[in-house]
Every structure is written in structure tokens, then in C-alpha cells.
Length: 549
Image (cartoon, rainbow, N blue to C red):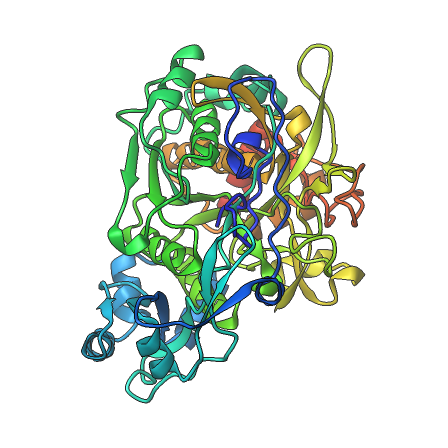
């Protein structure tokens, strides 16, 4: 989830001083906030914490149980062929067996959990006392207190699925309340909407009447949006449509309580709105812990209110349990099968999402092969205010930069075989693409009534999501299918750039992300680079008209 939560081991891509830093927002628009360092891994946190003893009935545990789907071979074939189905067909053919899901839910309720399952969902939410959870899963759950007074529960044991659930449940997450998602963002000027449209050659699309009409972008978020004041100030300042008729905010007690406003949600919405001002926006607010976040994300995919997902949240991949990785991967497969495009920030700690004192590691879920991972660049405008060049964003002094590198868990997907790097060791490589992320060259936003400059992969990610909203709108006008899972097309374009009148990507060949250098073609620092909006639109049309090959 967002990289900015206080205990989050999740790193979000964004250098929005307002969004990612846990410190209070200052009133000065010139104030600069630093990106908070990644939190210590769970084992390190436990070693430094005061042990409060075994968790008793007063400690509530929030479990998320991943469910087995049906016909996995047929689903794999569908995904491999690039085919899509409706949410209803997915639930009927590939989703969990409803009878088994309801039976498992009833067993959990009988065991004193508040358990819920919703048709179409691939998980069961189960909240209950720590001793009940410990007995159910055969684990030990302990309470701890950090030096700053924060308390958390945790278990380092491997859970055992009990017989009464084994027919339908295949994974469990929520075994600690320490590891959370972070949002990614760093500092306060910035590029205005006019600058962005010119810099990334999006103005030709807008001049053709493409403004996001008919498109809906959905966003999982962990910091609250109590009112529309900042958003409407931004819209008024730049002559954009009001947010009110376009924005829907969803909450559910089953998703927990989001953090107080940090600026991340505002950042995401304002950047999307300046590029696709008539696109509808749906925000799903959850608590920053993994269990609640996965529940909200599961509902986001189940509802399928829009075909584009923009996510500026993440966490140290090495700290993600196998249970949570399985739960999230299943939801992502469902999103791909339903034709959704999912853009995920790669984080703001360079190649070291888990911290400089640990091995290089990426940010989950950006490392999943089923999402489009978005990195960050530093931008350089010409004196005319148009595109000059970009470099990979990396700031060794403050140890920030664009996330990028190989996954520790996921094999290299087919679409990346032609750009396999020796340093990748046969594993999934991120990012796929990039855009402006350096807070020193960031975006102009308004938060808490104050104008500021922000950056981070939390900024480049919604920019890509909004660009695809314009492309989807153009596709529909031409009677073509929408983008859907973007990576096969992106890699085809990158490998066939000479075929296009204009390159769809700005190839970024300078700079580094504190470990990996940018270079010609695909690289671990910037992927294929940033977008040339008009050229990207034309390339996508060629890709789809050519049958996706």
C-alpha cells in the first residue's frame, strides 16, 4: 500500500513531500519534506521492541484467507491468449466454489470470528480474538511495543490450514499488524497541467477531444479524503471541470480506518484530472495494513467500476509473506482476465525498497508480472517549455530514487524474454515504463489549501493511468477494444520502435536508481522510458489492429 505510512514496510512510489512523509504538513509552500526511510523488517522490529507477552482476547486479529479458484488450467490458457471475460463469467467459471466458500465462512463464524465472503470475491475476511486465531492456525501470536509507544501483534510461525477450511482456503495473511503499505511521494512550484500536456505530447490528444469521457479510473488509497476543497481549488485554478460530479469515495468497515490525510490521495486525483479531466474517479479507502488493504482491493476488482487501476502503494517484497503474495496474485489474475489495466508505483527508495542496509529489493505489488510497474525520472525542459530529455531519478545524498530491479520470487514473464538482463537471473524485471518522479522536477499540486511541488513514483503512476484513459477513449471511438493488460503491447512497441513514424517512448539513457544505470532500450532504472502521448496512441492502435502481435 502507500509508502508513507508510519509502520509501513510497503513503499509507494511518490515523492510527494506531502503524501509520503509521516511528519505534519507545514503551511509554507516552500517547505521540503524528506521521504521517510523504509521501516525495519518485522524480525528487526521485534528484536528492538519490548515483548508484552502472548496476545490475549483483547487483541483483535484481522485475517484474510485466500480461496482456491476453479479450472486453473483454463484460466491460465485464457490469460496466455490475452482473452478477457466479464466479472460475472469469471465468478461462474473460475471463481471459488460458492458452496465451499459459504461453508468455510460459517465454520469461521462458529469459531467466534466475524467472517464475511461476498460472491465473486477470492477471499474471506475473518476478524476475531488473537487466541482464537492462534488456535485455528496452530501459531503463536505475541504483542510488542516499539520505542515510540506503538504497539503491534505478530507471529513468525507458518500457519496451518485446518481441515474444515482446507477444501477452499489456500493462503492466509494478516498474521501481524506491523507490516503495512506505504505511499510513495517527496517535496514542494512544479510542472503545471499545461506543462505536462506539452512535455509528454499529450496536447494533440486533448486537441482531438480526448478528455477521458466514458472512462473510469479506480484507486486503492490508505490516506483519507475528508472533503473536496483541495481538489476544487486545483480544478478552479487550472480551468478544469469540478471534481464533485466525477468522484466517488468508497468506505467499508470491513476495510478498516484509513490514515488521516497525507496528500497521497489528493496527489493521485489531481494528476489524473489534469490529463483526463472528464474521467470518472473511484477511490477505495482502507487501513494501511495488508489484510484490510487486500479486502478493499478485492472489492475494487469485484465491482469493476472502471477498467484502469492506479496504485501508488507498495511494500518491501522480501517482507511479503507467501500467503499474501498468493492472495494478491489471484486477485490480479482476475483483474487481467476482466480486461483491466493496472499501473503500480515501483517505490521511491531506488533499488533498495527494504532499506540501504539490506539486499537490493523491489516494491510489491509492482513486482507482480500481471501489473504494469511505473518508475520515475528527472525531467529537463527546453527553454520553450517542451521536452528536452530525462534521466533516471536517483539521489544518493538523501537515498531516494526510482524503484527498479529484479523480483526475488516471480519468474521472467514471456513478454520480457527479449529484454532479459543478466542481472535479472531469470526473474521478473521492473519497471516497465517511467515518467517524471523526481521531487526536484515534480508536479504542482494543492494540499491543505497550500500549493506545493511533489514527485515520486506516486506521481508518475497516475500520469500513466490518465494517459491510458485517453487512449481507451480513442479506441472506443474507433470501435477497437480497450488497452486491458498493458505489458504485452508495451514490450511489443519497445521492440518494434523503428516501425513507427514517431517513437512511442522517450528512451531514457542517463542516470541511475542508486544501483542500476539507465541505458538504450529497456533497463532496470526506467524500463522503456516515458510516454510520447500522441505516438503511444498511434502505436497502440497499430498493435490492436494487428491482432495484438
